[in-house]
Structures are given as structure tokens and as C-alpha cells.
Image (cartoon, rainbow, N blue to C red; front, side):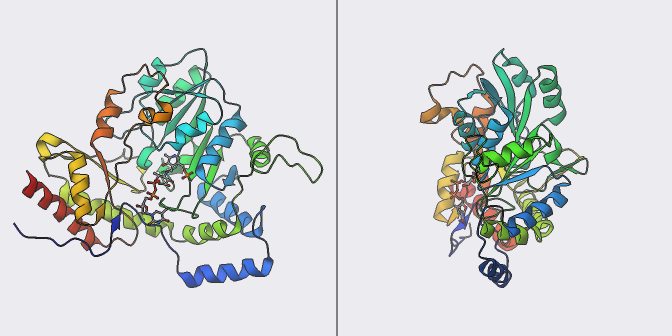
Length: 379
Ligand code: T4K
């Protein structure tokens, strides 16, 4: 069997998109001239307008990161008691509930795209349930209609953690138009980013004022504070990155799509490696992640063994999302009545493969060859 050299430089699960430095430097010169760095400056206002055009809504609010955006959004909607949510997510989804003193109730996920299973949600509703917090994990849309019907029938708020779903469209419209509100993360590791950053897109325009107060100390004006807000504002340097990255968004999605196709071409038929089925035809995906499930018996080694072997070739895949949130020490005290059979199974087998805009297709092919080599030699 032929040898493959490890990569000279580490290949990470993702790398941030960097606009040309000269473009960013030109923007910085403007900021230097303005001497306006934060507190709703001109760059931020411009970003908000451009994102409004992109999402086709004016009901947007920018934040310093996605976690605070979600925390504040929950507070802005007045969510209390219990919220039904997924354990198969980044821990910040649950933290946002906890910071609001809301009890997370974990429901199982679906086996195909790993989003919250509406039937499991319905079974967990109690008199204390006030909302559903679902995650478009890996940019895969949740079962939007089913969740909406459950929310409506039971008078619950429907909140989406859309941290991974920037650029995803359903029926030609941004996924931001579903539910009462959606949170998008603009962290450096995301397809579209502002270094750190977050966005809430909301249905009811009356929420705009509340979100503004909550992220800006509750200030109405210089002498009136109307609520105990915090500080969660996005600054001008983040805003500048956002404006410039937005120019490239179609190209970024196209590149991720090519990478995704290359992985599927090379590994789609390999025994023990399972890709998610394509999303439904009415969805325009963003291809931001490449999650695969490793089945030990058929692949010949466990997900964890493959994850470790890849490191020897300087390839740093990630196990998003393992462990499940309810297994973290800080949440182990919560009682979980759903056996979470699918979530446990997926979390124990998931591996997310590297994808980013300047990952060369030759390198993707090489990663795939390495996986096949590891499988062949370690069987
Ligand atoms: N909800 C969901 C479903 C989320 O996935 C997230 C965040 C949130 C809510 C909260 O949104 P934010 O508050 O973060 O806006 C990363 C990110 O920090 C986190 O934003 C993201 N989800 C999560 C899925 O991934 P880590 O701990 O895996 O990041 P880290 O530092 O290990 O980075 C991953 C790889 O990216 C590194 O191996 C190398 C590369 N990288 C990273 C950074 C930060 C770079 O090349 N350059 C960089 O600047 O959490």
C-alpha cells in the first residue's frame, strides 16, 4: 500500500475567511479618521443595512457574539420555566437558557440531519413549557412546519439557533424568516463571520427596541435607563469584517459546495462512512460543515481511533458534537426523561471533516486518501 506523507501544515476543521488585507486596511483608515469604534457607529449601521438587504428584513439586531445574542433574545421574549431543546449542539445553546434561569428539557434528534425531532418535542411539553429552542445544526433546516404547528397548538415561542445556517434558504427565502426569531453566529469559525459576532432576526418588529436596550445597558437616552441591560454591542472592526465578508458570500458557499462534493465523490461508497442525505429540494444549503458518521464494524475502526490517526497526518477533524450537552459536568444534574437514543448514537459516531474556502480540492482528495489508507492499514 502506498505511503502518504502527513501535511506540512496542520489542516484544521475550518479556517476563517480573510478578505484581502488591502481592502480591510482601507476600511480601517476610514475608522481611524472617524475615531468611532463602537456604540452603533457608521460601519455597524452600514452592515445592518446590508444584512437587511441580504436577509430581506429590517428586523435585525447585531451583537458582539452569538451566545449573548441568544441569551438576550430569550430574555427579550420573556421566556421562563422549561424550554425543549436539543442536546446535539454546541454547549452555548444550553448555556443561553441557563443564564436566563430556564430549565433545558432535552429531546432526541432525527437520524438523517440531526435536528430536533418534533415528535419527541411534543411528548415533553408540560404546563411549564414556554418555548422550543431548535438548532439548524450544520446548517440543516429543522422540520420547520412540524415545529411551527406544535408551537402554535401549545402556545409556545419557537426560537431557532441558526448559528450554522447563514446563507441557507428555504423556498427561496432566508431561513431567518421562520419561527419567532433566529440567532446567527458570526464567529471566526463560521462560513460568514465578523471575527466574533452574532445576529438576531425576529418576526415582531416591537422586539427591536427591547433588544437594543438589552444590549446597551438599557439606555433610552443619557438620563433614562429603562431596563437592566448588559453590554453586548458589536464594534466597528467587527462590522468592517462583516461588510467585506458579505461581498464574498456566494463565492464562499460555492467553494464549500465543491469541497462537499469532493468528499462525497471520494468517500460516499466507503463501507462504514455515512454522509447525511441531501437536504430536501426546497432548501438551498450552505455546505458549511461536512459531518460523517463512522460505523466501527463496517469501517474497521472506531470514530475515535480514526480521529486520532488523522492527527498523525496533521489533519484535525472535530467531533462536533461530542459529548452531548447533557453529559457535560455542569448539566449532569438535570433529569433527562427522553432516552436520547439517536442523539447518543450520532454523537458517538460523528466526525466533521475539514472544509474552508481556501482548502484546495487536491488537499481534500489527499485527506480522503489518508482516510482510506488508515482504514486499509489499521483494519
Ligand atoms: N450555537 C451553536 C450551534 C454554535 O455552534 C455556536 C458556536 C454558538 C451557538 C455560539 O456562537 P458564538 O458565541 O461562538 O458566536 C467553535 C467556535 O468557537 C464556536 O463559535 C462554534 N459554535 C463551535 C461549533 O466551534 P471550538 O472550541 O471548536 O473552536 P476552536 O477554537 O477549537 O476552533 C476550531 C478550529 O478553527 C481550530 O482548530 C482552528 C480554526 N480556527 C479557529 C479560530 C478561532 C482558526 O483557524 N482561526 C481562528 O481564529 O468552538
